[in-house]
Each structure stands twice: as structure tokens, then as C-alpha cells.
Length: 388
Image (cartoon, one colour):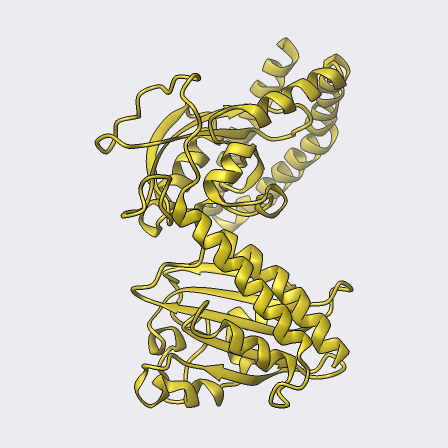
């Protein structure tokens, strides 16, 4: 501890001397050679003194740290998974590192899919910035805190309005993690805004499954079944697998479906199909979107290059999908409230195309569970394209 305090004092003095050197920039030119010599001396001091001292402190910390007991780690993982309340382990950017079974049921996510993705996509747009700010503050060791958030989908028994949660955040340092993580504990919030719910007795029996959630899962299974049938039916109107897939998704899953196909041999994207809402007058601008070059849509181009899906609720960048010939943003032209951009990627990593799905205002936004199902279908579509 004494060595760490001495090192901190030396580092503080060094920062003060650097500040003084920066202030000498206003001196006459004649004094600058001496200032340059002083700056070089300070750099040599960092290289010869401060950095070796830092390496010694790190090595001493590693020697004193005891290795974690595997049995204890296994016990901690089991306790984490079996907690009756939804619990998530987040980093400072609100990205999920781990979540228990109760949290996966609450948010409708698989643990493998949620890891590495921001949990804020499950919240209403208005509360996302506040949640990220609170998580970042806890990760900076500014103290534990709690806040209310609103989900994009209803909780059990609250199908008429989005579910609300009371989330408690606290900083933790899990074994093997180099940085501070944030433990988020979620509870359904049924009382007035800003007040946590009453503690739940462990003896209370589990609630019955939410009919709306079950219906949503059944609808996704039906969609997966119809998509598989459409991809296997090669003789349907002579259409390509990408066009057949777009027709399955149109209407029931998305208001707008924009399909882009990559040229053979890794060429640029070309627009293959644009399906607009049936009630849109004059196609709602479908002809203008069909004439657009996909390379002018930053979000589609990024999905093709990086091979990663994108889910956006109430997109902030109106030009994320480019603009039509008359300069109108595509997102404004389609009145998009949520979008899902999914690359058609083979197991080898090659991207054969991109599907962009849009939902207009008034329709429920895309959820992470729907994005997960769409990623599965995208792999099937890519395999069908390769076979064709």
C-alpha cells in the first residue's frame, strides 16, 4: 500500500510539471530550447522511473492475489442461475456479459444471443440514455443506485401497457474480470412510479405463462415453418430464394421488406426486391427505394461488410438507409418506427445479401427475440441462395 501511495504522489507531481511545461508555450521564442530540454527530461523520467515502477506494482499485485477456487466459482455460477429474481451482469456500456434463467425469461432472450449485446434494446427509447448513464456511473465506483425502466413488451399480467421494472445497480468485480462489472437486479414495478415493489415471498407459487408471450412464440414458430417451406419450394413462380423469403416476411412480420443481393464473387450489392405495405398509396415510394443503390445506405453497407445484424427502435439517424432520388430519407419515406437489418451470412462468413425489415408507427417494435429468430432464418436463406 505504501508503494502505491508513493507512486501516486510521484505521478501527481509529474502531471503538475507537465502542466507548467504546457504553460511555457506563451513564452518568447528564445526560451523554447530550455523548455524543450525540460520536456525531454520528463519523458525520460517516465520511461526510466514511472513505467518500471508501474510494472513492479502490477507484478506484486499478481503475486499476492490468490487463484480462485474452481468449486467456489461453480457454486457462485449455480447460485447466480437459480436466483428467483432476474439478474444480469453488465459492463460499463450496458452490454450483457451474463444473465440468469429468470432474466432470459423476462426479456425473452437466450443467454448465448444476449451476451455481447446491449440490454437497452429491450427498453423504451425514452429511458435508454438514463439507464446507460446510471450503469456507467456505477461502473466508475460512484455508488449503487436504482431506477425505473419501461420494457418494449408487456410483463406477465400487464398486456395492456408496456411492463415496468425497478432495476437496482451495484458494482462488482467477478473473479477473472479485469474491469469492474455492474450487477443489475430487476423486479416488476406495479406501484407508483419511482417506488420499488414490495418484497416477494419465496412461498408464492410461480405465475402462469403470459398468454400474449406464448402467442408471440407460437407466431414465430409458424413463421419459421413457413419460411422453411418457402425455401424448399424451388418451383414457386420461378422466384429466387431471396424473393420467396421476402414474400413470407412481408405483412405478417414487417411492413416493408427490402432485399439486397451480393454479386457473385464478392461484387457490390444490388437491389433484388422491395415490398411495400398494401395500403400504401402508389406503393408508398417503393419505386424510388427500388431504384436506390444499396451502397448509398450506410446501415446496409455496414451489415454486408461486418456481417452483423442491427436492431434500431425509433432510429435517430434518418439517413441510416440513405435517401430516395428526390432527397427524402428512406426512413422518413417509410415512416419507420423500428428496423431490423440482417446479413445473409454463410457458415464460412461470406455475406450473400442483406434483408432490411421495417415496421411503421402504430405497430409493436421489433424485439430481441424476433431478431434472434430472424438471424436463424437468415442462415437458412443464405444456404438456399448458395444452393441456387
